[in-house]
Length: 210
Image (tube, rainbow, N blue to C red; front, side, top):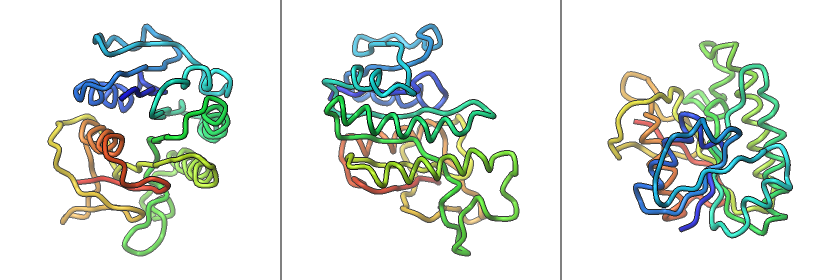
């Protein structure tokens, strides 16, 4: 399968690239600076592109079966997530690609109390702008005519091990017996490429955690 991955040089983006290559997909990795991605593989092409320009997105996405957005904004530029969402919807429509899988946020997942995670007492104030931007971007995808899937991580996502073992949910935060919600970056990438290989959550959001 021919995949194009925007935001491929970030921590999550690189894990997705590696997981896709592991499964023998043909990958185009889009980055702002090609020297930030050192991955080498016969099935990998690294190109530079601008996720804020629909025309750039359209040109790069043409000929690919699935588009993956792993874009993550810098601290203080959280609203770029919303601009990127609009650009992706417009660019993919122009480029004739319908399938989009998005690396999303966890803040809008509901807790057992029925409130969004980002509205709970312990949610870090400094992360709220990012969580709110993710929520606004999510709404843009929901209202689009694309064949989209939005994958929210656990409350804590960090580099770790690839186990292939995790639980899957939809709109509710998954926690373990100790009340913790965690997933490794590597297993998050496994779940995302699983969805690419065998779509189940078309037009919806899902989440993964241990």
